[in-house]
Length: 250
Image (tube, rainbow, N blue to C red; front, side, top):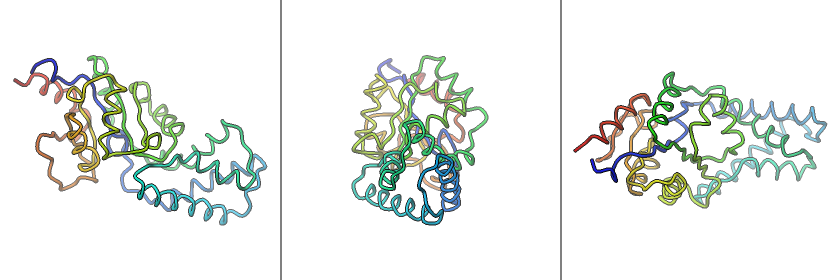
């Protein structure tokens, strides 16, 4: 394959690609996050009031912002939302405390996350081969929480480029976020391989942006046909071999 068509960078989706959360009980996770954050605020002598009221106030605010994001196609920043709710209730925290509060809401989800045993080794192999690695994630979770989680998993430093949709006026499947990632990682779209689990939000728009695409097997795509021109893997450990095959193709 001509050098100008070889894979020189790999971009990953986050959930169900790099980190597997699976099907979760969102109500139970929300309740756990509410309890952790509520107890933290009380320990800081903040005016949080009744726990059930605290839960409902945050749940309603979250649902409204989530509904609006689905209409506008723009994700919100959960940390900004938390600060807005808290400020109205006269909660006063410093910057680090606000970030810790956001983490406590996310922490229960991080506890159910699973990573394939070979993932770090695979990322190390890819990086050692000279490939640039990055992340594109549709998310309203602030990067302070996501990157703390990735750091705990020992994966953060592999990714020199990390794009979170709440930082943009668009999100996947909008091709603009893929083009923004290509610009940041410093490679042409045709030299980038995108790995994701959702056909309509990851694979098709990545290919539309001019990238190569790999569908990572997950419950989100079970029984679905791989789009023409894309590849499919069951585990991330298959990537080095696949990339070698793509680059050696005549």
